Amino acid sequence: MESATQIWLLIWVWVVLIIPSSGISPFNPAMRQTAIAHTIYNSYSYVAEASRCGAPRCGRPSKRPSKRAKQGSISRGFDPGSRGFGRPSPAASKLPIPASPPEGPEWRAFESWLVERGAHLNGVELADCGEGLRGLRTTKACNRGDELIRIPRSLILDTKRADARLGALWADGPPLPRYAKLALLVLLEQQLGPTSDVAPYIEILPTPADFEAEGGPTTLWTKEELEVAECPKLSTDAVMRYERWASSPVLEHDAFAAGWRALGLDGAAPSKAQLRWAVAAVTSRAYGAVDSDGSQASLLIPMVDMANHQHPPNTAKGLEEDGQHFVVIATQPLPKGAQVFLSYGALPNIVLLSQFGFMLSAISQDYAIVDCAHLKEAEPTAALEAVEQGLLMRDADGTISTWQPAGPQLRAALTLLAERDALPAQLLQQACHTGGGTAASIPTGTIAYATMIKRTLSRFSTTIAQDRAALKDVSLAPRARLALRFRIEQQVILNRELASQGMQAKAHATSKLQT
Image 1 (tube, helix red, strand yellow):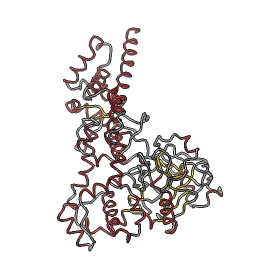
Image 2 (cartoon, one colour):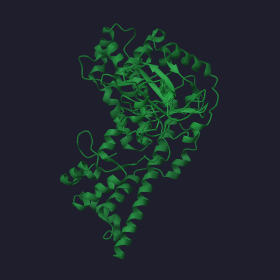
Image 3 (tube, rainbow, N blue to C red):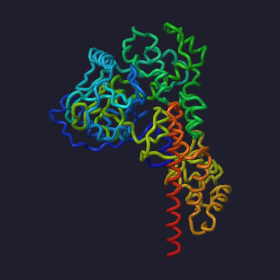
Image 4 (cartoon, helix red, strand yellow):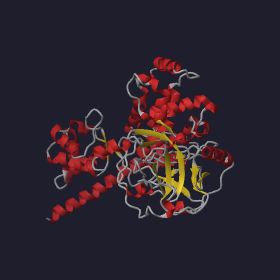
């Protein structure tokens, strides 16, 4: 990330990924399955709408292979991925995984349906990967460069199909987000039941009950469930993500119902509750892609969206140049029984939890959110300079965000404001009070940063020890457990930042004494 502003903006549209050459020759006979193999290893950037992969945790396998799905960063070529799910570890891809659970025959029936409709599954099957994780595994040894999965466009639900089937609903209104269009298409196909040409795929999508049992994206959480995390930004983002589509005039109850009837569609128009579920299902598993005509598309890709997330992944993935197939290719040798992984990108837990309904422990790209309300009162010229240097993030209205990621950019922003004598008076007063007798030998920006972290830590109602003790309660609801884990990780990172600042302050004071 080049700037804090980019962190806030590109976390949701993801980043441009620089893909190094893997050293695989396009003339290798193992690559003959696809004419675009060379593109996989020699493309330089990919833009993703929502890069993700993953699978759900639950106490027992369900008949639906629902999962924390993933979204891949796709251009015209392939994305080897940029970050991993973290579970299992990279070494796990080398290990065989257990045989199929009792519901295996239903999974095999789904795979047979795909193959009958033109999909190519080369030694890959749906599998229980252990501990409730569902994913994909190899059924034979695969070589580097082997094509593992090929899904034809006819099996992919995309925004073009949504426009063709339901476009009259939004033709005369303001633009709907692509994911909202795709969600409406999913609800239409669901309403068609067995007569839908993608019924077997619709049937395995996670239900509202599945999401509740696993946690699910925070747009499905109640206000009370969100408040357990004690992170106002997490709560605010959940509301904003819901309002972004739910407030569209296109979906206003009476007009939407009339439009649905006008299309001659059977059954009642979907309710807001059904739309909320469908949007969560789509945004937690759809891929953002640049189509063959250069347009942006959102894609639901059967089978591919069951692969779990790991970085670096052991595959490359993407839409072919002509847009007619989505292909997954092995980027390393895979033994029989190895799990097939895709990747999300380098995402912090606040995004993983918000969009996909899960989080990871101790990931290097994670950060804590710092209460920076005081910075809204900073001297405007200096504050704008910090924003333009990418040190501070702004909200959609252009004002400095109340919540900033802890880390070097925020420290640098406070240092810049201190050097310009532009720190807000209240923050400066608190910083000087916090600095005590050492304030003269420690940079004011450093003290201000520590002050803001202490202020943020003081907002938590419990300690890390208390939260860890609470996690031992086996009756804890899945969302409460996720919220507690998130709260713990935030406090751990903030305390680590505070300790780091203390060491830096001591080093600076020692340096001053020596000179």
